[in-house]
Length: 92
Length: 187
Image (cartoon, rainbow over all chains, first blue to last red; front, side, top):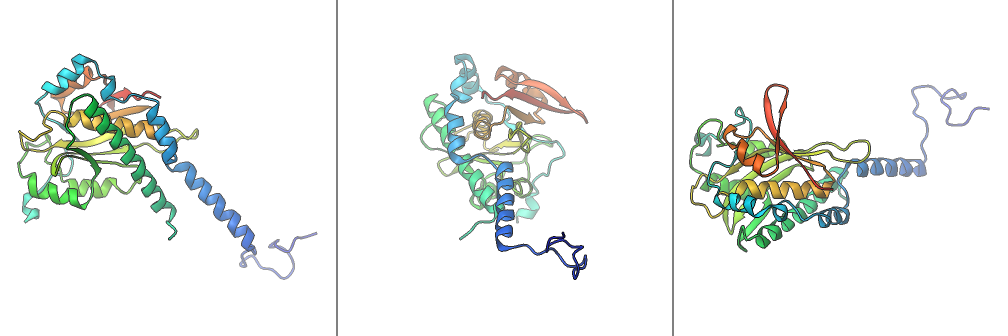
């Protein structure tokens, strides 16, 4: 017995998309939203909990490391040597 | 108003970064590294205006002088991008951009990578010497929040290897002779 949504059912052609009910569309929408949630960041509350578990980089430094940071006066730069560089001509 | 999934991700990641920045400010104050005028924000139009107006010093090739507007537009396409501006009051003192690796099957984001960082070219700016430490601290806090287990500093200046080692980083190489420093983020 063929179901009404079967594309091989009499009276249907392959060019006709299978009928999707409103409830089906809602379920599909919910599945897509859940999928996006999975690839997104955690909730703000979960993020806060994770940060509370650790003292953080600065609080973990030894007195010697803190002194080194306070006394540091060298360059503070990261980046690819071929990274886009500012052109003052474009600034006007 | 209903946000699109992308807009929703952008808003949520911005709130998580805000939390990470606030904790970093608290950490810096507790350690006596900065005063109450320290501000950490996302890079935005106001930041780029301040960058254009106040960072007028030139740099040697390979030592900064980045086009931050171009870089920001490139990085901000991903909601999770680290886009950090470091201020002392209204004075822009540092900028950084980074990425977070995509989620793995177990829902874990592996790595936060800081790709670009630069301090103000003004040699006597109020946070001189502290920018790298603040960027590391904020990036690590953000990584904690997202569940990342590693922090990477990409393409460091060769002269700073000893400095980063003393801060707990180990050196590593990528194909193409790219160098980065890495440290574990406590879980």
